[in-house]
Image 1 (cartoon, rainbow, N blue to C red):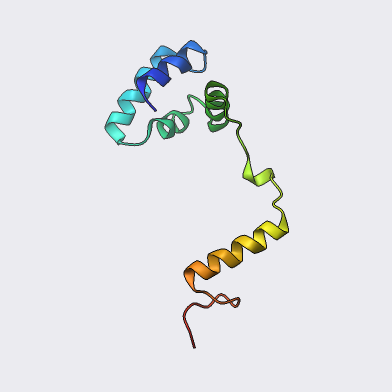
Image 2 (cartoon, rainbow, N blue to C red):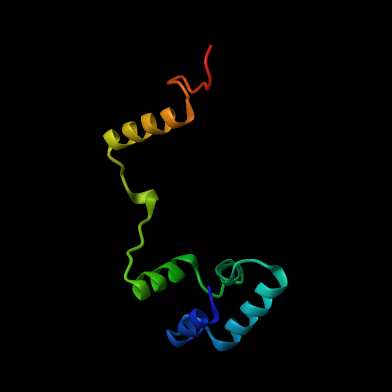
Length: 96
């Protein structure tokens, strides 16, 4: 996240100017990602930040915890992954 994004969050009234300044100072001191600092300091929730970024960039947010995957796709993916890592159906790797 860059300062321009902080300005946009302030402009959208999701953050105050004072909070933005405190977050930048804390980020510089801690070395954490700015998004982590903003949520750790409870200036903005992760959901609010994701909703804002979704609107800004026109990309929908998908909560994978609420998505039901097609079982056929899961089986295909597991087989493909197993082949690439040389595992067997029992979950053991290598040969006997």
